[in-house]
Length: 317
View (cartoon, helix red, strand yellow):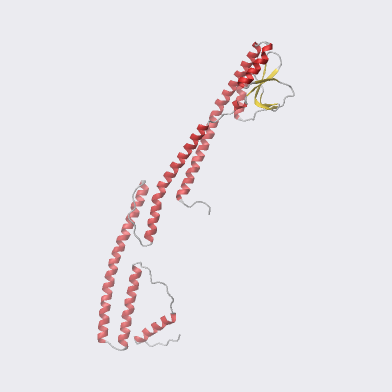
């Protein structure tokens, strides 16, 4: 799971690639099954026709002309004719659906005793046995093995690669069009989390993405409006609280003296500091920078303030 892609773009694209690949393999399997029977029947019919024509030509030809006829067939058509021997080493064709259909078609046209082989005495080819006449003499006729193979034109391969490339490009385009608005939304959400308010995002794409972008833009607008209203309220609070505090300090300095004045001033300064800290927190501004502090000095300040307001306490640090 740690090596799995985390991006929605990559995950969706790989999923589409898998679907396209499986679909292509399925269609290739279906095509291979569909074309196997017609090709097998065509090969069987062709082989039976070649055997019948060769037999008829040999029977009709004079004895002294047969050798020349066989040489001509070998040179022009790649067909060889050999007598069958009892000690022939024969390699039978594989037991798959294609060759079973071929054998069925050939034996239906040439007879059930017809033998078929892919190799006879270390000579590779498509071998078919037949009897020249009513005698028991059996012969092998060999056709080029290439006739049993289905050659795929290179142009078809290039067309297949082009179709697969176009399918993958279309998949990438579709996935990128879906994930691009989501990436923009994620980036804008990060900026809002940092206290920024980005410009409204374009409301384009599918209906679901348009509704999502519209809701996000409305949320961003509402947050900005609330932040502005809060800033105005905080400004009013700062003015409304600090003005009475300033007046209280002025009155204290005019009417009090000694420790009472010192304590009152200290209380007013402490209240003003608390208000300032509250305003900083409420505005969402960053606090003061970190700096080394002295806890002992902090305690001394607290004690001095308490002593200034007339409280009696014993302090030992």
